[in-house]
Amino acid sequence: MKNLLSENRHESYASFAPAKFIPYQEAVEKLEIIKEKLCSVLSNKEYLLPIWCLYGGIIGAINSIRKLNDDVFSCHIPWDEEINFMSLPSFAADAQNGGEMLLTENKTATIVLSSFVGWQNLMNQKFVCWCRGKKSQFIYEILIHHQLIKEKDGFKVYELMGIHSENKNFIQHHFHFLTDNIEYPYYEQSKSIPDTNIIWRQRNKISFRHNFDISIEDFMSEAAVEIETGVIANFIIENIKEIQSLE
Image (cartoon, rainbow, N blue to C red; front, side, top):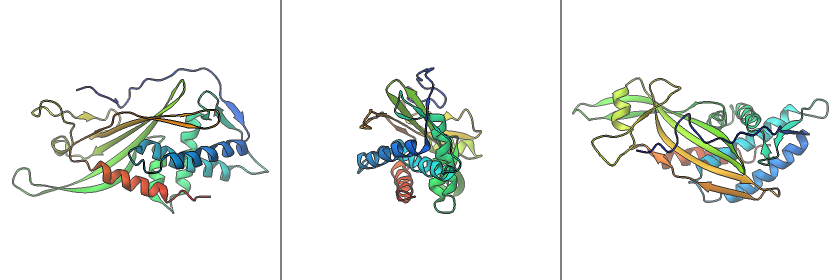
């Protein structure tokens, strides 16, 4: 089975062009334009979950930049003119910081925004299994992580979800990817987190033209069996919608 999105493999675009540092007010103004246009584009497009999470990250970054800068003390913001967006590492850091500011208001949004800098525990769930004729109950964690990969004309948002449990047999039996041969299901262990299998992969590509017109490409997604991806996606999106009016 072809691995569409390896956890640590992606096609990257190497560029040595330095980011342009712009006043924070200008960066906020540009991000606000992107936010408003992206909100319109995402209407009734719940299947673009990675872009929804990026949208939440933009809200967090705006909030972070505004609160960390004022007329007395301010820092210029690195803006990558090749993709007409913030420098991706700086954006990830500001999204995380903005998410941490939301902790008392929306814990789930905090988790999603922090996932741009590393794996985060999205939720804990219980699973009742009767596979061997005996009732067994397992507790597992669903983790989430987003990677931003620069390309020549935009960047890709890689979304990964993993399931973590100390019971490896339970994970491999219930949460695996289907193959053409039903007797040999495919599962992929995380390369960075022990006792964790990848259960969801999706990638979207987004481009911002000079007038901030938005172009989005949706690539194939892949989900493990017994994962209710629609339920998880709606849960994430509803929490991101809750922070839309954040000032």
